[in-house]
Amino acid sequence: MRKIGLISFLLVWFAFLSGCEKFLSVDPPYSQDVENFFQSPEDYDRALTGAYDMLQGSFMTLWLGEIASDNAIAGGESVNDSQGLHQIDNMTHGGVNNELRNVLRWNYTGITRANYILEHKDNIDFVGKDHIIAEAKFLRAYYYFELVKYFGDVPLIIDKRIGIEEALQIPRSPKAEVYAQIEKDFSEASQVLNPIASQKGRATKGAALAFLGKVYLYQNKFSEAASTFDEVINSGSYSLIPNYNDLFSVANENNSETVFDVQYTGLEGGSYGCLICLEGNAAVGFQGIRQYNGPVYGDGNSYNLPTQELYDAFSPIDPRRAATVLDIDAFIAAQPNASSITYAIGAGGHTGFYNNKYIKRQGEIGLPDNDLTSPVNYRVMRYADVLLMAAEAHYQLGNSSQAQILVNQVRTRAGIPGISVNSIDKIYKERRYELSGEGLRFFDLVRTGQAADFIQGFVPGKHELFPIPQVEIDLAGGNWSQNPGY
Image (cartoon, rainbow, N blue to C red):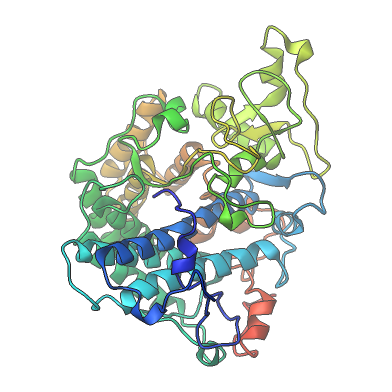
């Protein structure tokens, strides 16, 4: 769903663990009694728009899921530019990290907005309310899944807002309890949501089931994961598009492979001081080529730069290499006017490569500050991901023949020969070839126990989780313990 400006004045802008009153109050003229807000179907729909609004922050997972892994370095203007990204890149991050604090606060804001709807779900009855409630549950599950992947145990708050007194006392809930609630929300949402969304970007039955399967997979519940993914596959709702190179253009958004996208526009909405306020996809401009002057691409800020190791991991015959990793010097050398094409190197690091999936392209540039206003959607879940997760679950259950069929569907679409899937490692590698640059690599390495083998500086028993931001621990009155090793 596209972000709708000014909806915020109708919602509870409750910043988690901050404030001095029971609930945040907003002065007139843009105020409304929050306890009596839900008086019409339009009120529920507007509140739901506000809950979707926090998906804007998903670009942070696109960054951190790559930068924390062996796929990319932080890049940027200097090592002091977005220090938190460089700390995570070097595995030196601790409890004082702006990027991690944003992840926690933005996702809890999304949870609070979903809870606000669910707290008042019985105010009135109207046709279609069950669908709005199901979408709110889907979003709450999505935001909690983000949090548990990053931080493990987190406070579990359901169907209510909380006051400052309770915020100071609420403990971190064991991640098993958080996962149980995530499963419940995705499962209940899947029983109500339609196979086809009524509006681009809204949750669907297939999206809820796909995320439910992913949640099972993250807990090594392979039987539940396999059956859930099979339901998505057998529904016939999705198919791989013929050309891998077409996957990430604006022109081909919301295609048959789209399970769930975060929708963006070319409008601004915010600024560098408020990236969560943006209408556009901040990741695209930030990942563009610094001071670039030439064809096809636009200039950007050179963040999230793919590594040589990622480039070398691909077979030269695999077209996904060029679609994923832009070799800037090779690209320039192939142009007829190569000598006139220029770009700059940032002091935050340079690999010679750029994320070709999410990069500023001419013809896909918003206004006014086009570093902040890309209309390129974030592909949170693609059907190819579902097929590979299903392959992984089936292989773990001993069904290697089915795993091979699923993997080779993905390879055939890419235009490369099929393989014999006789080890789980082949599925893990296929996930990297297919999904690199999309924010999944770090979390894949952690959940499969491979992170220490691939990430330089990774400390087992510590870096599987990120630290709880120290300021949040302080605001909770020291009621929360820090994650181990930090």
